[in-house]
Structure formats: C-alpha cells, structure tokens
Image 1 (cartoon, chains in turn yellow, green):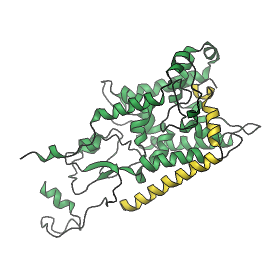
Image 2 (cartoon, rainbow over the protein chains, first blue to last red):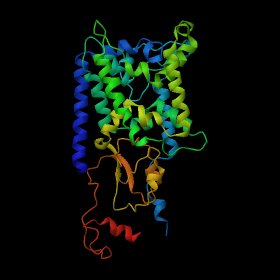
Image 3 (cartoon, rainbow over the protein chains, first blue to last red):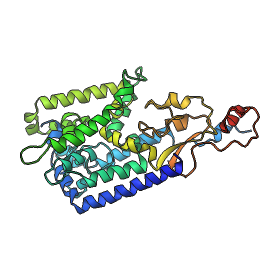
Image 4 (tube, rainbow over the protein chains, first blue to last red):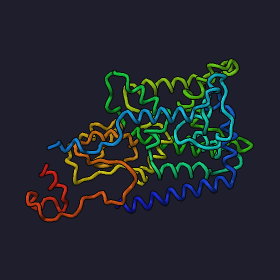
Length: 48
Length: 320
C-alpha cells in the first residue's frame, strides 16, 4: 500500500471518528460519561 | 569536512518525551484539592475523555478515561453502542496512533520510570510473541462483550475491565482514595486485594521488562495500535538511506524491527529508533505523501549486476 493511500484511509478514519463524536453528542452520551466519571467508581478502585 | 552523521536530524532529544509525559499527566490530573481531601473532581470537564488510561476516579483527574467511559456507556440501559467514545478512539488513533501510549498516558509514565531502575533487564519475556495478542482479547471480552451482554434484570452491566484488571484505576484511583477515606477502608475486601496484587505484579515486572502492561494487557493500546499503520503521525523509513545495520531493532524496547514494520501496532512512537539510526533513515512526523518504497533503479549503478531487481537502495548501501 502506498503512503498516499494510507494517508487517505487515515484521513477518512479521522473524519469518521469526528462524525461519530458529533453523533454521540447528539445522543447525549457525554451525560452518561459525566454521570459515571463525576462519582467515585467503586468497581474501578477495587471496592466492587 | 564535517562528519555527515552530525548533520542528521535525530528528532527531539530523549529527555523531552519524559517531560511531555510528566507535564501532560500533571495537567490532566491537576485537581490538587482531590488529593488533599480524598475526593474526586465533579466538574463538566469530566464529560470529556483524556487520550490515555487515566482513571476518572483518580482524585486529581479532570477528564474521563476512554476505556472506563466506553464500558459505562455500553453497559448502561440507554445505549448498546457508544458513538462518542468509539469516535474519540478512532479520531485519536487515526491522528497519532500509539503516540498516546508513548507520550500521553500516565500509567505508561509510571512504567517508564520504574524501568529506569538500574537492574539487569529482560529483553523478551517467554511467550511474548503470543502474549501481545492478549490485549486484543481483553478489549473484545472485558471492554466490549461483557459490559454489553452480562447485564442485570434492569439491563445494567458492569465495567468488567475496570473491576477485574485495570491497574491504573488501582494506582491512580483506588490507593489514594482508600488511603484518605476511612469509609472506603472499611469497605475493601478480596477484590481490592486482587487488584493490588495485580498492580504490584505489573509494577515489579516493569522494572525488569519494558512496559509489560502496554505490551500484553492494555485494551487502549490495542485499539490505538490497530490505527498505527494508517495514522497520520507516523514513522517513515527511507530505504535509500537504510544500510540494514539493525541498530534500530536492537534499540527498540517494544521488540519491533522498524526496518520491516516501522508502523507496527506495537510501536509507541517513543523515537528511540529515530535517534539511534546512524544514517537518519527513520523519521517521524505527519504523512507527506511520499512512497515508502525506493525509487526505481536509474541503471547508473553497475555493482549490483542486476541483482537488486530494480531497487536503487543497494546502490546506496554499496556506496556507504
């Protein structure tokens, strides 16, 4: 595979990733992340 | 005449990576009050992911861990898939691949520092060839499938990777919080013991072997590694300059041969091979559209007598 083709695939993945982030924001997934991250995660720290 | 090697661009100095790691870890874990009062930050930036494996239950964390967040979203009742986190991983991976592991991950920094302890080092662990695939299994099973499908009666799952494996959560979140909170101290049990045992094992192994967690267990490294071959920030091997001395392979602590796979999924873009190459054949940076293969043979070189099959790199090797 040429560098040019790799570059196109990389750019396509980057753009798709950014579109996914936008779609996730529209679905308000960030609120689920915030809810989880703003409280002590007992599983993460090994309490269960 | 000035020595040619002295003019070769070796990229950033070795110490710079360590400083980037320290500064980034400090910035993304800058909630000092959390360490003092054994509590965590609860502001709006916690909705935004940081690129590395940085537990959101670390008292200083200002952002969210992408692996923890991914499990939180797909194990919730509302979503079966996370466009937000998968998109974040794709964008970061496509932009810089495992550069994140080399420069922006706090648990990578901890392993790097431990590996600086001057004791005899293990170049390779037994079964390393196969163990490197374990991180992909962990990603699929513990980060995706179990949180998605092993749910309770109301459809709520668990963050299986965080709960059973993640040593970053134990080190950055568990130990500082438990140390300063009597209620949490009263609640610890065998799960905490298991996670501390796992953490200590990985930390001890890190002294002797370079980044064992990143090589074998990290699901975040597995995802970013998949993007390494196509990421925009990448290594470039100039085959015209390469003299096949093998110094890059000997230098690489991740066990890669940059001559064969400069953008291997295992490469954390540390830049050791770039600095080690005596001919400046390896560079790193954003893609420039050049072909990585050598230019066609001009026919000017007679020394290969046709054995180069059209590759002009032999000409350069004979020259050097």
